[in-house]
Image 1 (cartoon, rainbow, N blue to C red):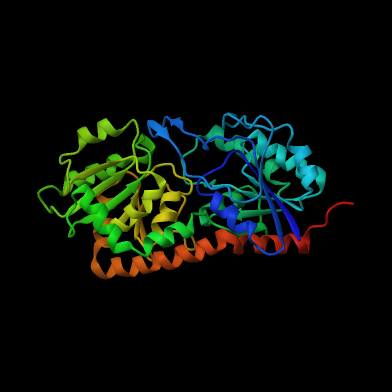
Image 2: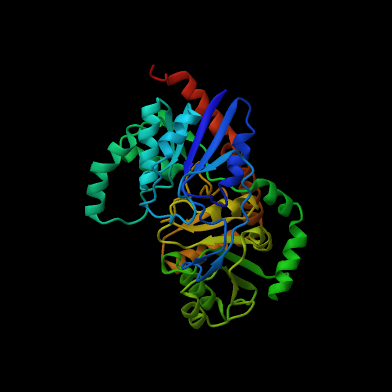
Length: 394
């Protein structure tokens, strides 16, 4: 039996189902340590421009560290009692999330003191634009932060390229991917056609329309404006393509003002969609589109492929690669960020009947394989490597 401690800032909606799966693995004694209770109650989210309440199920062994109540989740979040709590649990493996938070850096130090192996997950990639001072600083600092990590639970090709940049060899990679609540998604996908009819009926979108869905806060970096421009360019050419924006945020007023048509056949604003309803929106769509100019590894893309959607995404996103969530030419297309004509070309191609069917099937297949890794197979592989290669100091 291996004891696995997960150290995380707060309960996160899509990671909690993963912890539930990990806790059920044979020969694994899991405990999750939270430094904050952020998200358990309603809070104001500036990005969504509204109050948000997540439906979180903490049905796995866990503890809240001292002063967790109301502890703000920033890079400064910490828990001085973490070492004492880990000492009581005496883990063989400590799983951490990146290195930007004081909490995670403390977790690595405490794991070393206990002789436990550290496994790390981050969504870092190299596709976002960074200034040369930032790149220079990272070249000095990041290798020192990663050197004490035994294994990296990686999210995809771009994530692994990031680690290689800072001297990490492939032998320290175990592919794990970003988790979603597969039990819930399976229940929705099983009634896909019913969900498709219900969502379209509620939004007034005809059954024959091709729906281009994007999910996320309405923010400049998400570039939903490119989809609005695409919709505008289609006016007068075809009236059976509807852009569906699921999300709220400070850009909503400007996006509405930009759209030539605010109805089916143009742009439909769905507003904030609660996470427990998003799967129905994926089922109602034909293609998922992600235009962001800075998106390390999109949860929405992970959810969309699990629902069997072809994906069109910008080349600044971290979710594509030959073995990633979006595999260009297999289940999606990559376009030049900000180039609306290139975006349009890719979408037209994805909507071709034979291409759409082939890519949708590929997305379903890829999504299920990746979630099998996220919900246990990846951790099992990592723990086997730890048992083979890691000896706790006496």
